Image 1 (cartoon, helix red, strand yellow):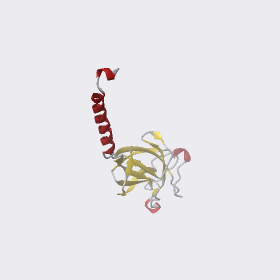
Image 2 (image 1 turned 180 degrees about the vertical axis):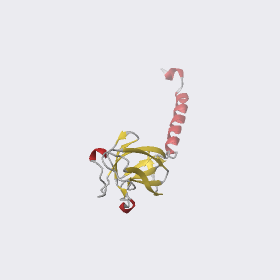
Image 3 (image 1 turned 90 degrees about the vertical axis):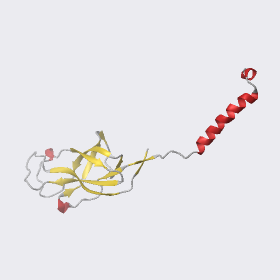
Image 4 (image 1 turned 60 degrees about the vertical axis):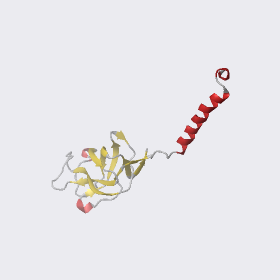
Length: 149
């Protein structure tokens, strides 16, 4: 029916132009599919003599996670919920007091932030006192990070 209204030549020209556009778009460089990121790590064993101990991540930005050694994240503030793994013999706090804590890490692009549990030994903690530890970023280092979008 269109052939009655338009000649074949009139139909062929727009079709050829459309195909040329599609081919040229396919040749253009693909958009960058990586984004800047930073890394938060809990795998590196901190210095116990500095009262720093390992911890386990239970939630990231309010979402439950399976703990892993590294978290590649976009730059910005991220909330970590963590549980301490303090195995110091002088820790005399009941198991009921060993609760998770939440803290915020300001993730910077191309930086690795090492997190740990800092054991506060300046006071004696007995019973259900939860002030015996706090989560900290104990070391930050340069680290190339590329996150797939």
